[in-house]
Image 1 (cartoon, rainbow, N blue to C red):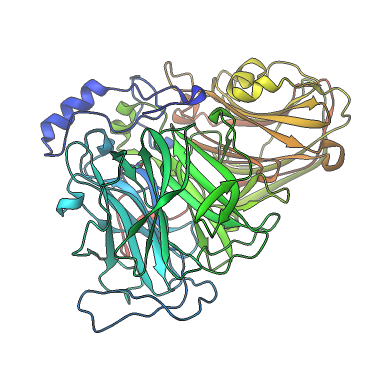
Image 2: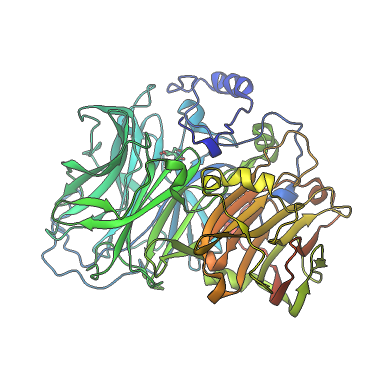
Length: 624
Ligand code: DQQ
């Protein structure tokens, strides 16, 4: 696949052993080629430990999982012709009204391999849609897979897509089917068999599949996938976008339909840009700058709203803010950088194929993503599971209309116990303050840092923007600075041989301050050969007025999700400390290594309880 400079560490793991395994299973679709690449460690001696398994992140009880395939999102009023034998959806003439919440249940669909903890995309094997339900986004009940490859238009795999609830009552899944060994792709539809089943357990594919064929001039038909959630245009027609590579260029193809069943391509794409090739897992949504109220794409979009186009490529989720020109049915970016290394990221760590939905229960937009294992393929097999989803996050646009803000959904706070609270701490250069009294392996930490002076900020070099990870490596937590580095050291062994550092460093750039946030994994594990990058990203900060730089870090064993400056910048990381396996416990510290003293006006931290994540299957407990 195509890689960015700072996303370059490809998955080198165990192609040889994977091929043998896949050949022995003799799946008819196997072409022996890897479908995807993502950062993972090369072969290293495996450690089998239940202690890396997360306690409150979403994951199936076992096996491989990747992309979230979409939660049910709302539409509005409906008009269903009950006389039709096959459920046939017809155009509504009713004015669309308010947001809806489907029977009080969240549905999470996800890419899942029922055959083991290996990636079935490697050889176009049996990828199905896993399915779980929840009433709070935190505790989940596992159900049977919603869709499996069993028709000619998905026989080599049911890949990613989206769920839409038409007019508030009719859920529809639209997804990519792989039709042959060359990974040619088409789009299919499935409907619930029984809409009055609160869990929507069973799904049926429509007889007219595929509803969208791969016949478009210049299309690379093995790069034509991941349809978005549908939205309604001013003409009352449904629209979806499908990611594609057309004449070698990344394109968001736009389709419209009266009935969500038969689709016509609009010749002009929603957007295309030759800075990137194939776009996976497109997401397109509306936001009002400065408001954390979410918008339902099928409701009236208020004036002043912006639209966001998110694309996934090369293990990075990037986004562009712009406007949706309704006359031309086109997304027009406010600004777009020619060099895609400068595109803003949803998250600067291990966070891919994100999908957002409008949560009508709380009037917010929620996003989450796949966070792959970054230990090795042999570890996946040894553990018997691979892949988690990030904590669902509320997502909105900052008042300046440029930067998305994300914050863990408030429901996660129901897992907090044993609060500790410190106020008025002061960290001088070289200080380490140990945070005690909580479970440091399962924790939620919120800390504010306030530099006592802004005079010593070092000078910012704009060329660093091209490679923040390099800056995190070179100006790491041990390198003294003017303002910073300060932050948290987590999952630290007794002698600090193992630790993960999440920290900030403040720079001055002409009129403004620029902050570098890093999540440095290079010393996160004593295991040799693991993929342990120093993730990082920059953001602008009004230090003179805002004064406090906040950090929230959710630690969940092998998952570390960090939110800088109230969610302006996010970094998800996967870590595999030996100390965690050995049950030696782990230490957590706040630190400062800059010459400017930093006040900590507030530090709050909690242990996090275990959530009930897919330990119940359809109502009965299953072995996790
Ligand atoms: N994963 C799916 C594809 C998608 C990719 C296959 C992104 O549909 O493009 O599992 O991770």
